[in-house]
Length: 168
Image (cartoon, rainbow, N blue to C red; front, top):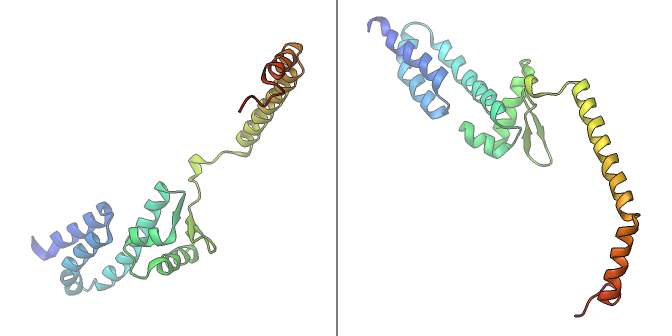
């Protein structure tokens, strides 16, 4: 095609569709000459870090918790967990806090997306329901253990088992 438009199309398609840094890097390298000739070398410089940020956002859609070393491996970061943390810090500094890193455990915690978070009212209703179930269970336990029939069954077992231990 004229003017290297195919390179631009391939680069755009790779940016949108690729999930692997190596695949995107190949497309970026293939378009590098065209970008440079058109005076758009700066575009390539900006696309690679933005591709990594896109991949981090993708991980956040899949994982709630991920070890930093595994995150680095999934992103193809040669610098390992340290580079992964640096990337997360850059994203936070840019106004996109996408995850928190637990320094003790090395785990990256991605917050739940808004649509998966419970509102305060929903959480309160769920807690009240659980408290009601706990009270119901406690009441059943008390009524069972204090029932005459249950007490008779226990005494019968104790007599048959010779004090509850059994034979052997």
